[in-house]
Amino acid sequence: MVDVASDFDGAESDGIIGLAPTSNDGAELLVDVLANSGVIDKKEFTVYIGKSGVDDSYIEFGSNTDDKTNITYLALSPLSTGQPQFYWSTKLSSFKYGTSEFSFTTANTVWDTGTSILGMSSSNLKRFILFVANGKNAGLLDGGFYAIKCNSISDFEDIHFTFGSQTINVSKYEYLIKSGGLCVFMIFELSEQEDFILLGDSFLRGMKIVHNVQGLKLGFYPQRTYKYGNDDSSSLLWLWILLG
Image (cartoon, rainbow, N blue to C red; front, side):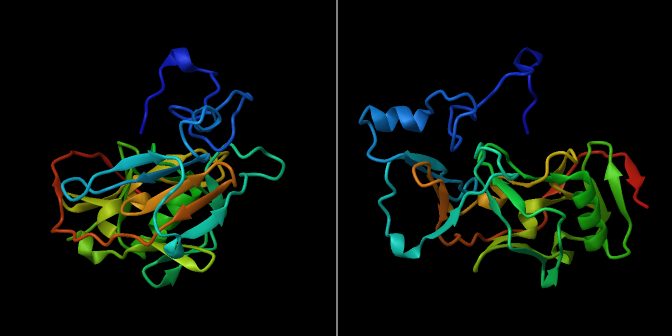
């Protein structure tokens, strides 16, 4: 998560270094500049988000040179009809918590390597937390995150995002942390006007993601499966507000 300095209020941006699929103001993006000057052979870049202590993260500019028989491509779609393609956004087909279907009020997703965790509108997030709690005590913490009283993260399920025929799995150990007798959801609230699910590094981890600016599409390879240990306990102190 990023705190925005007041001197950036109202400023247009094309990502941290201009890696959006299209420009907000018509200026050339970094990938455009590199391709048009012959530094790279294609308007494309690839990002891999690794797991700390296991494998490295990296970014490559230019054509993805890996075997393309194992890659899935998704067409980008704007967040609303008629809006320019400012984000690496695409439509979600379905979502499951374990084996249970859950429906969000939006199919929009934004794939964002600059965000560490997941994000969704406050109404979708609260509905999801109550769905997972299934009658257990759930509450909002003073840090803005939701939590459920628990014994272990292993009490919960992995979550599964399906795009077309391909499913991307997010381990429970990626979206939850243990703090005392609470399991805290590392999912932050977006405003109700932000009609999308923000998919940060906890979703992207272990996948090679191809950002094709030329064809306005996202490509991804099968995920690496990581081994997760026991609950990583946190010593954070929280103020607990019970959900109704």
